[in-house]
Length: 407
Image 1: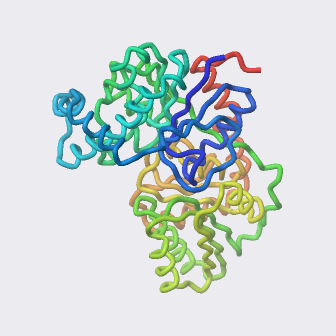
Image 2 (image 1 turned 180 degrees about the vertical axis):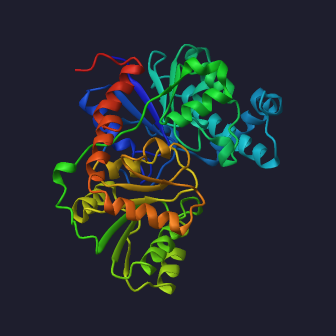
Image 3 (image 1 turned 135 degrees about the horizontal axis):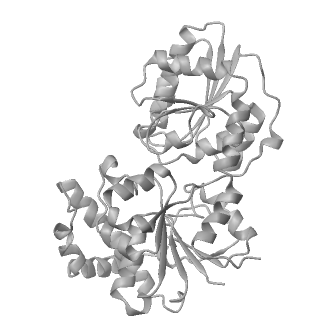
């Protein structure tokens, strides 16, 4: 069996990339030969059944200077303005150089670790960003890696770069040298095909997935006089978590006979601002529980105990949120904004889709609809089983990259 080298941002270190947990469990169940190569070191480490190659995380002042000097004299740096789609602003040039430097770190690491990495391995980048670019540059510049197979996933910012205002250099070079890129959403697949139609045959879709734990779910309270609302995201400008609270406050003003318990999971630079805002704008019939960053298992345990009526996401941009997958895996209906690939998971079977600039009346109508449709929980769970079941989706993914001989 070929060894798969999975390049991540930081997983299994830190608290990000939680959506990899389900995939790792399936890979372990399939008895795959897999090595995880994180790019960034973070303090805590999660349980992981596979080998972890820590070399890419290691850094020093002299190594960074050496890589930067090699970047300065490279054709790749000076070729940035001459791409088919060159940078359009100073910020784009800044992004291009930053991501190219990060790609050179990956490239340098591979070239100095030939005793670790086989030319017959599979190289799998979890992101269609500088990590994938670093693998591609090693393939182009070093004969040892010239025949390697490279696969990449594409999520949100690393696919919708233009809508995010970002710039990742050498996208066409990446597409021409990968065996396949798998968008986690149909919207992402269409976006890449529209922007790079000559590489359409290399662009596929492979949805993420989570495990169902619905058999552990408690009894749902049918009395709508107490509404349990949950949300889960980083507390950053993009996610507009404060807007969830103001929307619930508005709903409460017109429904004074209803008590709302809102639980938010997630931390971020705006977390204390959110706490302050909630404290200064207390609403009589809303109980707020800002629980900060929690392990994925803890979040799910809360869902199982609370049996929420609705999950809310009002982000300005998304790929397909794993947080929504987790909610529908328990039959929790969704209210979410129509951004990125969200419309692929939020529909009439799973909840209500709102315009990005939704009105408070629209929000009120959406919440009323969810509370009045008793069949929505079952339809939501059925939709999950069809499209976002981890076992089905990840077995299909490894089959697509040519790993057929699992036990």
